[in-house]
View 1 (cartoon, rainbow, N blue to C red):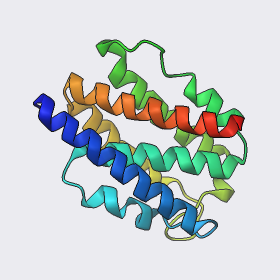
View 2: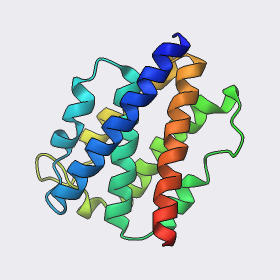
View 3: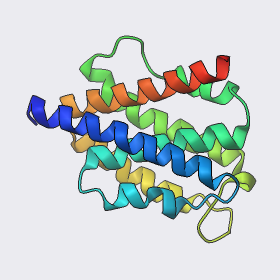
View 4: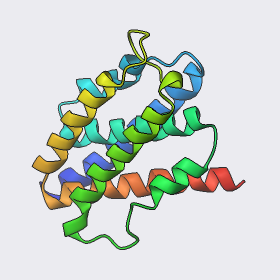
Length: 160
């Protein structure tokens, strides 16, 4: 992708981040995953889908665990300096760690069908993993940048 296309994607990511965060805050207890992911699933862009999924996973982990320890712990998987080699692996491992935390708190995890089954999440994460591995290095780096920025914002809010 061209530099222009990546900048457009980054602007779009920021807009979507705001929308999803607002929806998430509005929904409070009644979380409907399909509703939150509708935005992501309608997107034709794998980058946007992946960013939406990452954001939703982070928001879910934060809400369900009601603490900061888990977010801090999973944030540690992200290296301070990112080389191209680690971008893809970091993105995939991070999503897996989120799924692991959701599995620990499975009774609190909102599902579309009301059964505490992570199958729905697993399917989305499999799609996410496939998209991440098909992205070029620049897209992976911008997605990782988005992830770092989102975690930094959450960790800063938690310190206040």
